[in-house]
Image (cartoon, rainbow, N blue to C red; front, side):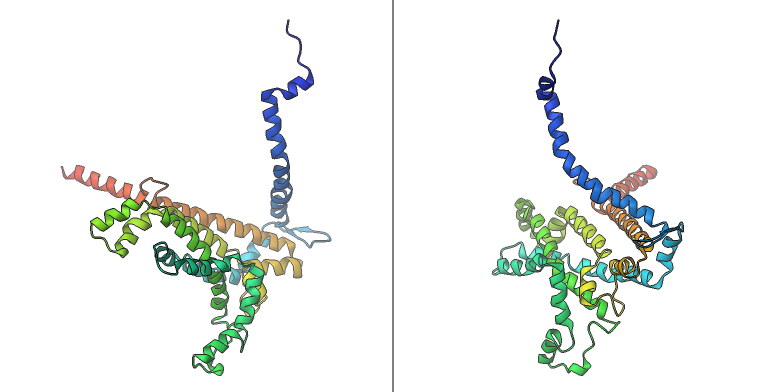
Length: 321
């Protein structure tokens, strides 16, 4: 007759010990994730249905806050400003620079370092740098005067509503171009060298190598950069907040949300804005994933567009017979 195992023997047994180790190591990170991510997220969803401040009574208003997000001029204008940063995100992909610098060029190492350095700088510091860079009579105006421009003919880079959003969006290009460049360089350097050799044998020039060898080989990284750039452009905060404070029509979605939550104490409306932003980012991600599958394929899979074309050609041949 088998005796029952003692509690100590049961705990120290291999199967139980493995489960205890897994639970122990998971407990702290899962707890932190629940406390600082999931619980606040569901609380934010709840707050979005109320007219409330941080302290005091709250009144249930249903979907009124969500309707106000799209009807308030400042909120809707902030959404439109995201287009400036979306355009800037495509510029900062820096695919051209990466394709050039991945090959052996004199001084390319120094140029890579200079391009990547802005990404290492704190976003608040970048904001202060460009705040003085664009200030009237300071760095940019001085350089342009050296080039022969008259100060009176130059615009106010941060006050002129026809150009100030372009100026602020340019700071994102300067900061994040190096990040995209490094990702592209890593992808391009991993391309099989035999493909380049085959291209040389076939007489392909540099542009043809770029189109037919490099682009198909790094399609996954291209889509990843597009997702990171576009979703990031919808949640820009540091440059407009530090450089202009959101004044003169430069307040992005996050800046307006911050003002409503902390200055106007419209916590319910700010929460609704946060949920709307989450939905927009999810929609943008789903669209880009569909584009990746349709035009680029997934992994080594053939793009859905080519599969459909082949199917139509086969159907046409079958009908012709």
